[in-house]
Image 1 (tube, rainbow over the protein chains, first blue to last red):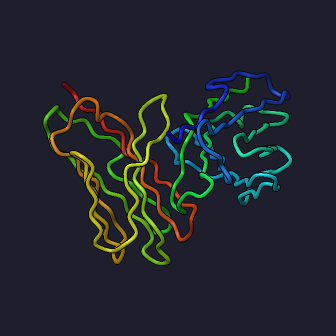
Image 2: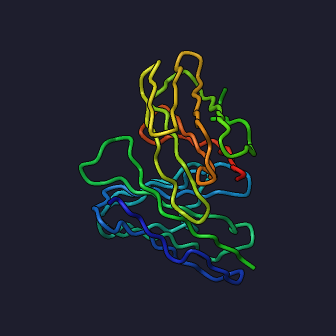
Length: 117
Length: 110
């Protein structure tokens, strides 16, 4: 149980285009989803927290107009990188907290490697 | 310590060796300490969540201890096996959303 999927696992796009990454909870309802970014040899850095049906809360320094997060249902959250640039190339990973679950739990997806050329 | 620090950054051991890693975190405003196991191309998998000073947890050959007063946690693996090869992440913070360390990459050679 508690499986989170991400799609795509890898994506290469051209500078200036937008890319959408999907995060799905497959066997549970996720009231809260988190989006992280990891640069090479760095730690997972929280970008934003989203609650179903509400606007996402972004961490300091993360541009909300560039990284659009939508959490329209209890099983799906999407991250859209708009007008991507090479410096947005990174590993993006989501996690989800289950409805009725404990305060400490997070179930992670396998991540998406984004390369902007 | 302002961030969550893990050491060593990487570790190579032989099958059968026992090993341990360290996670250091700010001791003030402690909430919880998490350990995750992350295999390449897979999702990070939660190993332990610890909240109380002196906590010790065990799962098979893997165990962890917690010292919240001095701000560190140890993860031990007894009799390492090649399937233990992974990156081990710890995370801690003063809220429900922890801060992650950079991880310790463990490679167990057969």
